[in-house]
Image 1 (tube, rainbow, N blue to C red):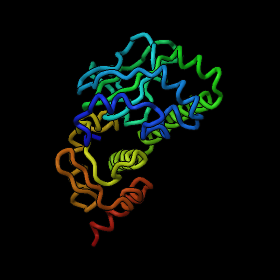
Image 2 (cartoon, rainbow, N blue to C red):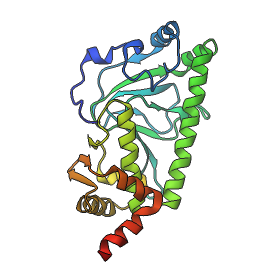
Image 3 (spheres, helix red, strand yellow):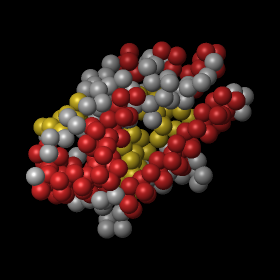
Image 4 (cartoon, rainbow, N blue to C red):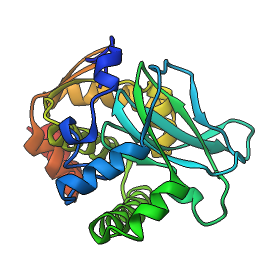
Length: 253
């Protein structure tokens, strides 16, 4: 995620038809002429830097945002006065779909590292979807994906223990990065241990302890934010509920 620290203006200006993320983003399934029409409404601004906001809670909903390079987190205020991390968004992912209903953002979106963002004014997007059936279908797909993600997160927090939550998080990042043509086993985390713990409902001390445990068990190598997954199969087994049995067998041997 943080491999691209320097973002040139030329990269930002790349049109939708030439973008390597087109198969993951709004242009998916569109005819070339329709991609051109979509490209005409997309706004591409200067690079954003860590700490910059795309929008804040209670801002009026005007646009959807697509991560072109870099990463973004969404979060809402927590009852304790801090923040509750709602998600981490990678290149090709759309942010802001949840604001369509109330015409207002219920959360904030903050850039985690130097990033390029495509802004898509929603009013103009609505006009296009009325005349491009394939774009309308893609919007339905993205909304369905958002609902599916929320369901998966509820299951993760409700059914999984700490080990399983962190393993599922790492595997999710791995798969999403692989879809973007990046390494599935060697990557940098743009979010902090505290942010990961907040997202997974774990104390930061638990997250740090689990990183150490996973490394000691030979599942991964950790060097600060640099992660190398060494045993994806065991991580998958852990998420599937076999992790506790594996650890008991190791302790008995």
